[in-house]
Image 1 (cartoon, rainbow, N blue to C red):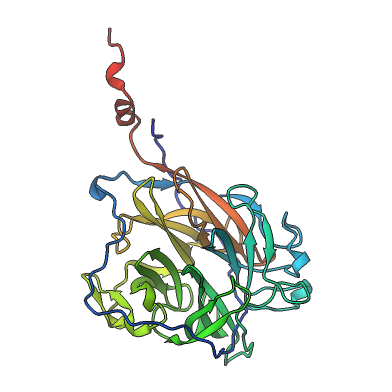
Image 2 (tube, rainbow, N blue to C red):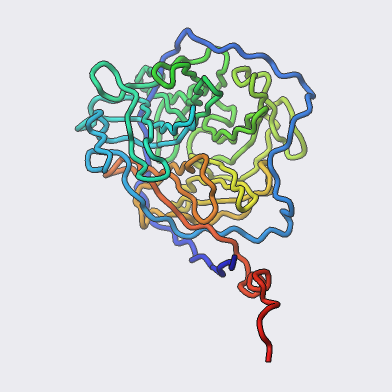
Length: 389
């Protein structure tokens, strides 16, 4: 296969209408049994590229809109579920289906506020249509995790990422105390909620709760079988990225988590090292088998851009950031979530939210290719057979 020689245009900072989210939740009495993980248990490593040091840089081109996913004017016409405006759209593959989780959701004229809603995607490989939503008796998309909606106490509860444990779906959430300024907010706590009926009803765990200041107020899950990793950032969009892991059967036990301190795994979250420097906003991480490396996408608020980094291992080293999409082209952009389970060979597809005046979710795609010289690629494609006379 002949690899293309490519370069990326320089990133140009552009003005951006910044996101100010609005959503929240009350405690449930339900909980999940969680067995503590044994300290010092040997665990398998995450996938690593065979020759990471020699790997050619993986380049990403500028993203383009595939289609608007939510809103009355979208092909999905989500107003039929009383979803006129919403955001986020991170995804969970569960029992062979792809579910999409949204944050603050509104009906017409900002009414019918729900802190979180969920859709099921009918054809992820094709039209990426919304086949249905988790609804209440009125047929409207219903709130997944109940929220108090009391400013200064619990303004909203935002689901930041999700994962499937087989029969059980799990959402990580942050309980927002107060929205303050652009890109900044105060969090009361973060935690896990679970559903055993495919997203119809949700319960906040009483054990899986972390106080504000843990550095993992917002997360991106990475399922590695026996171990579940989560990349974390603090409240807002100006902190660095840290990494933790836990045994699969101890996901609901905060004492069982281990944190990467730059050299190894430790029990103290205060020792967690920064694996990607600040500033980082909403993020997602996925493995590219084709390219033998991890991809991380997030919002860089200071650049008003969505960026991508790559690494041979979850702990890094992570490459320099490349611009994927800019606010100059997509005003109010934020929250890039890579579509899970895709090959990530020639392109990366992701959802992206936009703030005013749209406040809706879009499906995006950006090309991927290795920065390899054409000459070297041609030789590997049989250049030795070329006639020289």
